[in-house]
Structure formats: C-alpha cells, structure tokens
Length: 458
Image 1 (cartoon, rainbow, N blue to C red):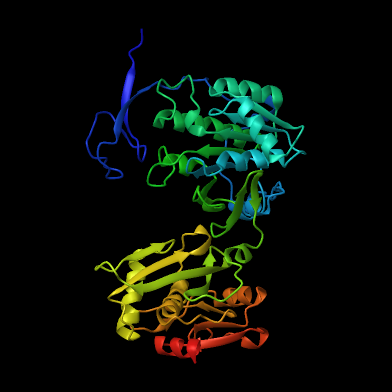
Image 2: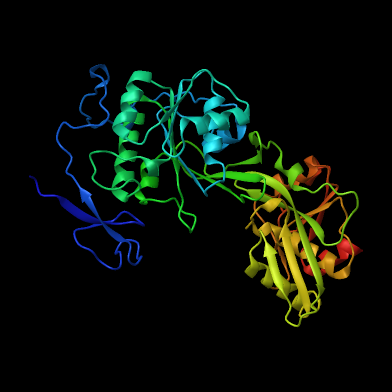
C-alpha cells in the first residue's frame, strides 16, 4: 500500500509547507496551517478530457504581430446591471466568481440569470439545495425556461459526466466550497479541494468555450473564503454587497479581465426576485412632502456611475452627559474630523451636542465628495434651518475649512441636472477649464466653509 502523503496549507493564502508552522511567511497570519492529504496527479489522468477533434498541438512562441485575434461575441442577458458589471455581457469561456454574505441573494441572482436566457442550454449545479428547493424559488420568481436544467451533485466527476451528456451553453456552480474531487483526499471546502475543483472547471471552460459562474462563500472579514489563488485563477471576481435587512443590493467587480473594474450594478430585492435598478438616484432620494431640517443631497461616484444620495443628520443637545457620535453608512472617523472643522473653522459649538448621521437607502459610502453635503446637513440641523430642496453638493472639505476639488465633476453636475436640481455647490477649483455654458443648472462656486454658510442661508 502506498504511503499517504500529507502537507500543510495556509487556510488564508494557500501557501504550502512540509511541516506545521505558527506564522505564515507569505501572508503573516498566525495558526492558519492545516494538515491535508494530497495525492500526486497521475500521468494521463484528467477529470475533463477534450474530444480528439478538440485536441491542440503543442504551443510554440509567436510574434505578437502574427497572432490573429477576433473578438468573441458576448452573450447579452436581459439583466442590464450584470452586463454593465461584466463589461458588456458574458464572454465565452470565461470563469466568473461571485461572492457575498449568506442570504444576500447570490443563488437568486444566478438562477434568475439562468432562467432569463431561454436561447441557451443552462446547467445549474447546486451542492447546497435540493432540486425541489430550486423549483420552489423559480416558481416564486415566476420565471420559466425550457432550457434550464438543474443538477443536485457535489462530486466533480459525476458533474462532468452529466456535462458530456447534456453539453450546456452555460454552467452555474452553487457553490464551489461544496464540490469535492475524488482525486484529492481532503474534506470539501479545504484549500486542496477548492483549488482542484476550480482548476478542473477552468480547464473545462477554456477548452470548450462554455462560460462558468462560481458562487463562493465569504469569511467573517468579507473576503472570499478559500485560498487567494482562487481569485487569481478566475477571470472575473464579483462582490454582491448589501444589508440583508434592507432591500438594495450592489454588485461590484474587484477583478475583470474583459472590462473595467469601476462599474457597479444596483438591484432591489423583492418577493419575486431581484429587480435591476436603472436609475438608482431617483430611489435613493426620499420622496417627502415637505422640506426637513438636516437633509442635504450629495453627488457621489460609485465606480464610473454618478449617484445622488440623501444625507440625513440630527444635532441635538446632549442630555446624558457625554455627547454621542453615531453614523450609519458613513465613516465615523471622517465624521469626527468634519465636526472638528465645523467647530474650529465655522464657529459652531458642537462639543455638547449629540450628532447622528445616516445615509439614506442603506448604502455605505466612502467618496470624499460627500464631505460638503455632510457639512451642509449638520449645519442645517444645528441652525434648525432647512437646505433648499433644489440644491445639491459635491466637494471635499479640508482641515483648514477649504473646499477642495473632486474628480469627474462634470459627470456629477450632469446627473444633478438630469434629476431636476436647479443649483449645485462645488469647489471653485473644480470648474477650471470647464465649459459651464452647456449646463442649465446654476453652479455655485465656493472655496471656504464661510462661503458655504452664506450661500445656504443668504
């Protein structure tokens, strides 16, 4: 009997070591090495074998100019948000990894995509749900397709046998952590299994030209579970984000070999599935019958997409001694910095005031261009004077109270004008060299916090 060979793998980055060590020399994490059984790959053994007609000659070097390249047509889905994030559609032979928190809607999104492509033969492989559970979800979404096939299986060898019989045009795996290969003697979800199963699927995608979507779990710190090599192997990495208790979801990309990584898609979770949001600015702005104190509209960018969001704040005297500082969807440290600027440069006495800040819609934002809107909201609540409803803001606030320029101000101004705002307040340094005559919206140029206060309240 052959001797069983074992080695140690880092569960964080996938580094390999012949013996156990406390601190990983690759990623620096402690106590992440776990012993796993390995088996050397046999010559001639392959989990996915191309037919003889598809076998290729050995690769030889070519001059770059001699390489013939024809851009492959992408598969355009009915989901405009997914197409935007992928760079224009699904690329043949691509391997896409989508990760997100449990219950965020990853399986719902993939099943919705599978059912929205009746012209393609789609195989949906689930290792977490039974076929009856998937049928119940499809009935709830009220979407039907005669070309969507469901397989509840976790063994990769059995999956590839069904793939050879069915010959699908699109493959969905839910999820990669549940698959296991019989050629690796370790538990499903381990570093060895995840790497082996992903390698088999990547070989299948590249040799057949069939796009493959992998659903992946994430760790408690928000990164995709498994070795970091998993993200290096795939072509595209998508992150599905949002709060399970709120209705909006954001699909963003952190890696894309076929397009930009600056795009994002926004969805609304409903009882009948995920609905793509074509114009998120109109939804993120609260429809209110009267103008309220402490509410300001800021123009931000999520990737290449301009959004107008509502900033809400409440400033009230502290009745329990120590003032509270609370923010939802906005960095609390940056909020404290802006409060210090308003107190030092604006003359506002906020030391004995409770301050609560909220970004409407449940979004989490980090665009510095929202500083001006946050300050305007705080000033409005402190002075008990509402911000004009036709005014929005786009500017970064410095420690000296100066209003700094932000990038791509032209896109922010155009978005505000499209949504019917009459005025937008920006830094005067941001509009240098910009043709203001092509905008119908009034552009208020400021350079200091004192000017902001005067423009707001006259």
